Structure formats: C-alpha cells, structure tokens
Amino acid sequence: MSGKPARAKATEGASVSPVDDRSVAARLFAILDAFTSPPATALSLTAIARRSGIPLSTAHRLVAEWVTWGGLARQEDGRYSLGMRLWEVGVQTPTARNLRTIALPYLEDLYETTREHVHLAILDGRDALYLEKLSGHRAVRVISRVGGRLPLHATGVGLVLLAHAPTMVIQDYLAEPLQRFLPQTMTAPEELRRRLAGIRSQGIVRMSEEMTAGSSSLAAPIRDRTGQVVAAVSIVTHTSPGQGPEHEQAVRVAAQGVSRALGYRRAS
Amino acid sequence: MSGKPARAKATEGASVSPVDDRSVAARLFAILDAFTSPPATALSLTAIARRSGIPLSTAHRLVAEWVTWGGLARQEDGRYSLGMRLWEVGVQTPTARNLRTIALPYLEDLYETTREHVHLAILDGRDALYLEKLSGHRAVRVISRVGGRLPLHATGVGLVLLAHAPTMVIQDYLAEPLQRFLPQTMTAPEELRRRLAGIRSQGIVRMSEEMTAGSSSLAAPIRDRTGQVVAAVSIVTHTSPGQGPEHEQAVRVAAQGVSRALGYRRAS
Image (cartoon, rainbow over all chains, first blue to last red; front, top):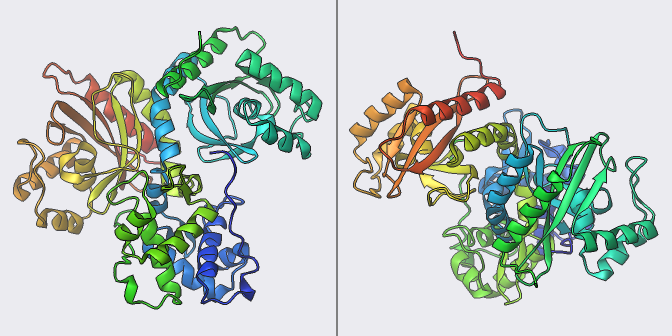
C-alpha cells in the first residue's frame, strides 16, 4: 500500500525494437499515463503520442487496442477518453474496494453529523491518495477528488499518514524541498518533525489554511487488526474560530469505528 | 455509454506469434479479464494463465509488466491482485467521475431521507452497471456493489434503463431467454414489454422480490440536457406492505435533482 509503483516510461521507446513484448507493454501503459499526469479528460491522438513519447503510427495502433478492449473510448469529436472498462476493473481493486466498503457507513455518519466534506485517504508514495469523498450541496470548495493526490505535509489526512509512516519514509519525505502553498503551510523539516510527534501522541491533527485559503481540516488515523495505520479520515470545513471540540469528537469516533470494523482492538 | 465494449479474447493466443503487437496487447488485457469474470480478489500465476488461456511462461512475463506499472500487485502469499494504479486511472474515467460527482449530493439527500440503500446505475450492454452505492449500517442485505453488474429485467434501475433504451436494444434484450431468479421475476417478453411502457408513462418503477428475497426497489430515470435517460437512481428496502408513497416521492425528487444538475429542463 505504501510505495508508489514504478511507472513505465516510454519516452525512449523510439529506439526500442517494436517486436519486443516489454516495449509494447510499456507503450500501452504510457498511453494511459498520458491521461493522468497531468489529468486530461480527452486527448487527440497527436496529444496522446506527444505526451507518451510514442511515434504517432505506433500510438494509433495501440490506442485502437485500448479502444477494442474498452479501456479508451473514442468521442464524437474524434478525441479519446478513458473508457468504462477501466473504471469497472479499477473499482474491483481489493484495497480500494474493501477499505471503502468497510468505511462508508462510518463516513456517512460523520457527514450527517458535521455536514462537511468527509475524506478517506491512504498513503501512496509522497502523496495522500483520496479513496472517497462525501460532500453536501453547501460544503466549502476544496480541490480534493476521488482518485486525486495531494501532498502529505499540507493536508490533514496527509499529515496523519506521514506521522504514522515508517521512520525511513518520514526521513525521505522531509529530505526533499516541500512546497509552500499558503503563508501558513509548514515546510521546515524540524518544525514538521515536532508536529508529527504531536499528531502521534494526540491521535488527531487540526490544520488551517495550509493548502486552501478559507478551509480547515481535522483528521484522525484508521488502524487495522495489527494496529498499523492504513488510512486517514478527515473533515474539511470553512475556517471559523468559534468551532467547538464537537467536530473533533465526531472525527475521532468515525476513525475508531472504521478501525474497529477492520479488527482493531485498542490495548486497555 | 450503451453497448458493452468488445472484450479481447486471448484463448487462441497460443497459435499467434508472440512478436505481434496485437497479440501482446490482447494478452495483457486477458490477464486483467482473468480477475473480473468471474470476479477474483487474488489469483496465482497458474490460475491467471489458465483463466486467460495464455501459456505460463508468457503469463509470467506479462504479469511482471503489470506489476512494474502498478496494475497488479504481488501479495505476501505470492498470489496477485489488481493494483491501486488501476483504481487510480479507473476513477478518472469521465463518465463515471462526472456523473458520480454531480449525482452524489442528491444521493446523499435520498439516503438521509430514507436510510435505505441508494444506487446509481447506467446501462452497459445487457446489464445495469452500478456506479455508486450508499448504505447505512442497518440496511437490508443486497448483492449489488460498485462496479458490479446485474441484469436489466430483474432490478429496479435495470428496468428503468431498459424502458428508456432504443427500441432495437429492447428488442434484442427480450429476444434472448431471461433468467428467473425468484418466482416473481418477470421473464415473459410480452408482459415485460407492457411493464416497460408503464415505466415510461409513470416515470418510476416499483418492484418486489424479483432478484433478492425480502427486498424491494423503487427506481426513477435520470435525464441529461437533451432529455435522454443516461442513468437511474433507486432505493432498495426491506419488503413491507405498509410502505407509503413518501419513499416514491423521495426517489423522484432525487432523480429530478440530478437531471436538473445535468442541465435537463422539463417541457412545461
């Protein structure tokens, strides 16, 4: 669950013989990657070829393969988008499906109690990967989305996941320069290290205006049967100084509910 | 959105030269298909090779390609499961993401009002494909799941989607023998044809114990800007004769809310 999978790079593909399996697989994956980094809803064949670094004629042939299987769909304007077959396979991924299925009733409760955005995220590489997001009509505008990624040091779920990551992961994360999104984003390694220790001892993080102006977040860890932190739950609210501790309680209760459903029993 | 994508079959793969792009792509897809029909959470390399009809040595090489990209993950017991990278790409599929994002607040409202399972489904081939499912702790047991498929004639969302499908689609669907899941499952083409006409005129379907014993369903169509039915919303409840029309009203309101959000304006 931790550790981002190595992504196939096909930019050097032009120099590889096209009869090599490895090159065909890497190129097929590079075509999908063209839609995800940065995210694109629809791309022309030329754009796919450019983004994936594949010669146009090869891209043409491989895109047709994806279309036949249903992984890409050709739109009326001739451009291509990710196809429903990928969605159908993707939602069967056991980690995403099991965790989401188990967590959903507790996320529902949290949403009903607070009426704020509710997030469920896991650690993936240097990012918090958002598995679920529940939102009402009137919740504050946020940039998170299901399947989206946000940096660990600037989000509530991210800080919780980083705080409970293996020491080496924390060390590596803090060793690289961290982006400052807003004046209040914490980027100094030593300051962050103290904050992570505080999160571990308090079991919750409260942060305000570190990623998006006007919004605050409360996040807590979800543990599995072995006590390991496997996910984080959060609510994101309008920043408001008058907010009492009742929201904090609701986030803790939701995180504990999911943890219990995963088999976690707190040592008494 | 309608029309199931043709799925690559690689069962005859052994006779195709392995240096052919087409064969490599078809085999890569056949490996994923091994996990979905029937659904499997984890498979050994041998099981993957058998299910996909690919020689073991080829399967070994291509599974390694999927693992490198993150589309498959190797478990501690040596078996393989679908990987998070597939989930991440899959949830970016525009149809699934846009419809789900737009519909979710209305589905939330419907869940809060009724406290029953809430479903969002689209037509895909001969199935209702479930895009979303919200469930409370105490809702009735059902067999639907996100990304799952159920037959059109035996589910509430399925009947709504079939009722508003093109005439040719209805004709083809009714031309094949339909499975009877329970004594009350309607399978006679003429009877179903009358029922579909009724659904079109009433704008809602109520069904009871046609797929799962003890459960009933209420479903209504979701229309886009052009007036075309693009999805269906339903609630699934315990079968209970005392149930009043208030649930029916709630389902209609939710379907209308999503339709309006998609740009639909009813002709007055």
